[in-house]
Length: 323
Ligand code: PBG
Image (tube, rainbow, N blue to C red; front, side, top):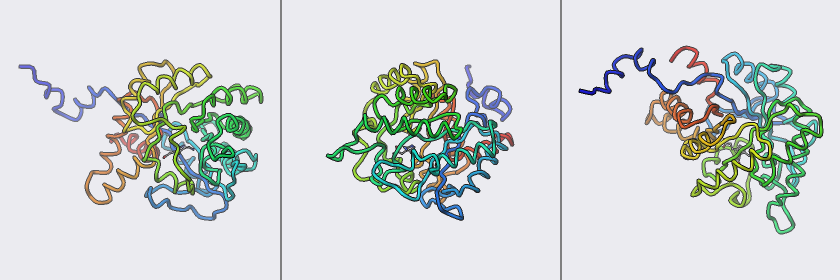
């Protein structure tokens, strides 16, 4: 009789035949740094995640390195927001300061990435600048992204992550980087980014009060083929790596993209995915640690080489202990 259970008999057997392995280096830690605070501020909808001070961010980066984490993705929360998100392009804006801080702390031991988008910096909370009718103006936004790319690269970032879903953003960012002598700075393109309800807690994380929604620029959850179109464009425009976001509700998209490309593929396990597991665990409804590792394994199994996750450091330490 064929007995598949033979290969499940012991932990050693299961470990040996496992098809998917997680490694600390595959994990990327998204981190928030807020201007003008003296103590880290807890994010209520993301228990265990903080808006960092400059100091506590440096510490978090050092801990990530010690745990063997692959990279860090930085988000800035400025004191002052305005219509054009001017703090996003000020060389002394909080995100640029944070990039320099982290670089000083960890050098090249961690891949330093930065979110390249305006929503953390605008008072209306949109990912771009608005036209006179209040719509997100694609091409005017591209000019702002080009400036952001330049100041982030000047600050020493290794990878920029254009996440605003503006048409042509990868092309414009690549051109701006090259023109400023930053040929070696890579682009992690948010290729398939869906208009998701699961970004909810992120709004608290970056103190954003979005007016309206993002449905005219982020993708419709109903569409899969559209992701392949976005993928083709991003690769043609110069993306070095591509990303799918959110992760768990879009594993089919992840598989489809992973099968289609020869560049590294990342997935972003976003704030709402984190909050769901933490909330259920806090109620005693699921085994938190097992659920975390299961989600990360599932995302890897679906085709992500790299996973952005707020549990990066914790999961990396657990992997190191061999759990
Ligand atoms: C855009 C950006 C967002 C996230 C990462 N980059 C918010 C959005 O697009 O609405 C969300 C990350 C998360 O929810 O964890 N700057």
